[in-house]
Image 1: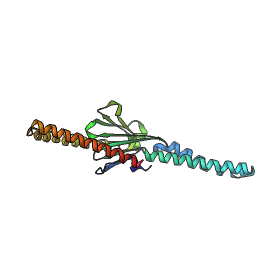
Image 2 (image 1 turned 60 degrees about the vertical axis):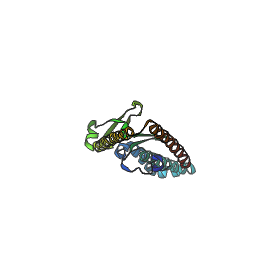
Image 3 (image 1 turned 60 degrees about the horizontal axis):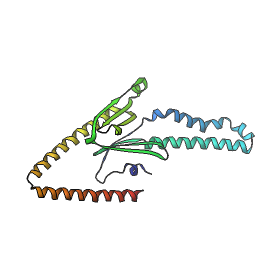
Image 4 (image 1 turned 90 degrees about the vertical axis):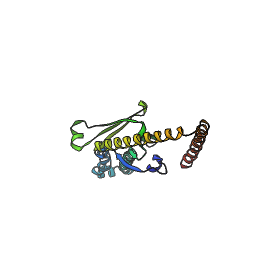
Length: 211
């Protein structure tokens, strides 16, 4: 599955910022991959002296190193935090077949903060960004990204803009409904509910086609 398909963006939704984990934090995986691929060459002649068994061991170690390295690269690529003009999307890729996608609109974000801890994070300027939402079970943590203050400031600005726009829409809707009769308001509510159901059905079948 491509990253774009995993994000499931709306037609009019634009990506503003993409944050991956700082690659340096994957140095243990890089070291293991390097050792698995390079180590067999140091034992090239002793392994080949074993005949077919030595050749199989040589090839197997290199293949294991390549597969392990590819797995870690895909894990890094799909572990991503995306900021759009409508919401934030967090993709947590724990394995090749284990993925969690969380999306939170800016209206539901209560607070955004970041933390840089330790000498290593201070020197290389990476840390965690915490996004607190209206639902405590949906709080997001973006781990080990470069320049976390940039992401924190961007989300904070978009959160303020979304709330201001929401307040303006509520006020405009209030002024509009005050001019309507009770029957007109009931008719408007009924129409909106019908449109919501139609939109939900449309999204359901669109997601089915993507799968």
